[in-house]
Each structure stands twice: as structure tokens, then as C-alpha cells.
Image 1 (tube, rainbow, N blue to C red):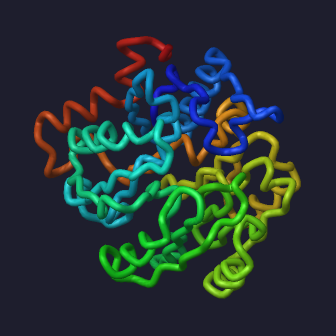
Image 2: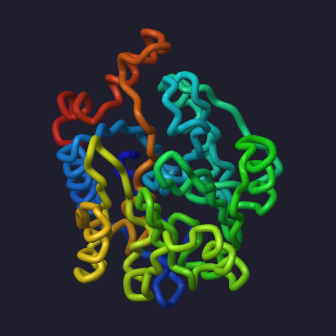
Length: 315
């Protein structure tokens, strides 16, 4: 996660960031910080580790770390130093400086760092992600607003060597695939109206009875941007406040524990919900094999508990 002290609306790249008169919304930094800390607390209480990267004053959108890039081999059992991070090539100018900053972070964190062909725009795991069922996975790639369609072909034949379901987004409110599609470990939540008609049929065919349609009211509350994670035998879904209670109960019937989190300052003004605010590192540990002493020390230093011991509750 990225500290939100510099979170502000700068470019107005998605409609959530703009008022009706097209002016940019203004962030309440105190409220944003409180919501961020509360979200971190809830993640920690559920047994998750949180590592923090600091943004800089000019990188006002860096708090949405799901856009950082993509880890190749994320769910492999091999140690994370054998995995590769591909940083995003951002579409919007005011976020382009994040690429180098994230690449440096992951180098220090102990991952290998590579790159996609420089001519393409691609915003990482926000537009490219697997949906899982047991040991099987179906790769999804979305494009239309922030990622170039050619990246789907590169993922399929140049990196993954697996079939990729390529989908075209059609509604700018759902500008990344992870704002409209959310994996639940077997079922998949999908807001079909965020996709062009051909893509709607394509994802229906690919997922079959695993597909659970998101209704419009919950889509507007950003249910599609919920953060799903498995911790030991628990299946957790962090959903934005505003998702209807009856929908939360329906998801719980699928064996998923629903945790409501208020990140309204980030979604309501930045267009990013619980998933946008988290980049999933998979299984990793400061003491795992293959890390240098410097990389292990870096992990310890960037863990939220270490930061809070030095700074208190982060301000």
C-alpha cells in the first residue's frame, strides 16, 4: 500500500474525480488518512502483512497501488526472489513517474524486475489478472481505457503461454477491469454492463456457472473493486461501504467472509476502492530464502508495524 499523505486529484482522468461542473474534487486529507489507517488495521486484524511505499508530492495517485504493475508467478510456490515484477506503463501523464518508483521498491524488496515493450500502455494487475478455481485459473485481460489491446496478445504468447480472455471495457466509470470483475476463488463477480456486448458473451462463455452478475446499484458502489484474499482457511472479501446488505449476505452464502470498509474518500473522489488501494504481494516473508541482507532489512523497515513503531500511527 502507498501512504496517502500526498493523495489529491490532479488530472481528473476518470469521472469519479470530477464535479458536475467538470472541476476537480478536493480531497479531505484528514479523513483520507483516517480511512486508510482503519483499512490497514482491518487487514492486520485478519492476519495479513502490509508493506508501505511512500509517494512523493507530485505522485498524487500513487495510493492506488493495484496499478503498480504485475507480478509474474505471483501464486507459484517458489520464493518471491524468483518472481518477476513488471511495472505499469501509465496512460495518464501525472502517474507516469510512479513506474520508476515502483520498480525501485520491488528491486529493494527482492523481486526480479523486467519490462514490457515500451510502446504499449498497460496498468498492471488492474487490467490483467487470473480468476481461480482450485488449482485451475482463467486469465482475464481488459482494455479500452488504460491498457492497449496488444498487451493481451503479449501476455498470452510472450509471457504466460496460456489462453487469455481479452475483454473490452465500454463505460469510463469502470476504467480498469478490476473495477467491474472480482474473483472470489471459485465464483467471479462481474458487472456485465461495463463490457462491450461481444465481451459480455465472451466472459459468460469463459466462466459459465461461476459467473455471478453484479447488479447496477452494487456496481455503482464499486462492489467489483472489492479485495479478495485467502488467509489460511478463511476466504475474505473487503467490500466498499455502500454495497447493499442483501448482496453481502448473498456473497457470504458462497463461503466468503464479507468485511465492509469505508474508503469513500478514495472511491468518491479518486475512483478507487479497496482493491485499487492494495497491490497483492502473494506469500512473502522478510526471512525467506534468496534475499540479501539488504533486501530482508528493507522488508522489515517497510512493514507497517515497523513504521508505526518509529512514527506512531502513521501521519
